[in-house]
Length: 459
Image 1 (cartoon, rainbow, N blue to C red):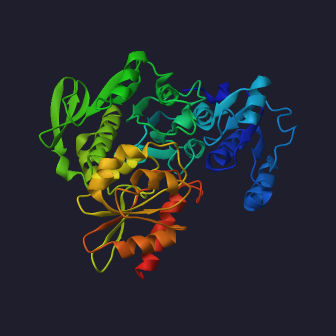
Image 2 (cartoon, rainbow, N blue to C red):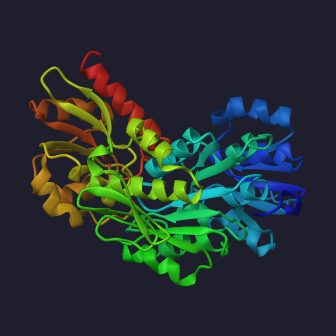
Image 3 (spheres, rainbow, N blue to C red):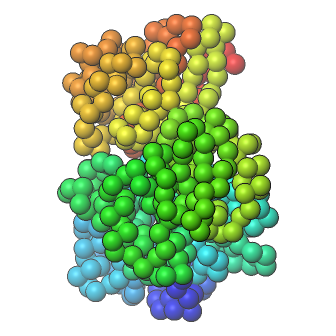
């Protein structure tokens, strides 16, 4: 990993005052580096933050970007939501000011091995489960990244830890775009399917961003790939790391796989029975895949199998990912899958339930191919309730397949869906879109859904 002594910039502009930008700001100030914090949103949205900035001697610029914000800055840290095509980013590049992602910055100051997890879907569940497996083995597991806590915050919290520590971090393609020295000891590419086509010109750009996770790995490191996803396997062609793989369909050389309803670990050429697939407490084949990945990560860290079995037995999944919210008195089950921000995630959610589904979908479109799920929607969805900017696009794809309603708010959508559902049905929030048209993030969307459900049920 990069040495903290190698970070050469004395004054840095941090672009974006959301979670990762604020985390980067705190880490930089902790190490005595001058910070300019820039965000195009108005200052009135940052009143409590502004008070903190004064105490930290950080120079803030909110609202329309001023011409002089780059003056004296030697580097720019960008938040994941800011594209490399932004005018200020391009201006910095023209001035030969290095553009550094927040995960890259944090890695300069990391004092523990990094486990980095990426993929289109399943990252959060895998990261959370792997972090719990590490923690239950008596290791200080610092879980962070694109999962609710900035990687910079995780690195900062681990600065003074004396016992063995592992930094388990979820990273997105946005965060990997501009890395140069980011060096995970263990990297996982779980899967790659079409996503973020509102950001990337084509799938090749998206795939290339994901593959950057192994850019700086060497023969002492591990790269874990999914043999059931031929796209991820191409990363094995250009890495120096040791390869480990997972599969739901076939035996692997080294890693973990499923055969005849059982999970096996494959180590040094030997297949070791681990547990039954039925022992995994989370529904769906995708969660078996997530479990395999977390197991291989943990075994690469030397965690014993008996500890892993104990963790798996008590793990119930993560918030906002096929999360059981409530069951009504008349037997309707409400599921919060707000983390499903693309079509592939929605597909996995629908395949997880064998009961009729009243689906709440929609949000900010990412140029998704909704038609790909036409057959599954016709088979599994009894009624559709649409919200957000993508309503006309999704209605065009599925409106003739199932009865379809539209709602202006999530609360209204819950009421409509509840009226359409009968005993034994599932009301599923699985948007297949990002949340930024109506909410700050998918967490806010999921929490609002849960409140709306409980209010509607009088709980």
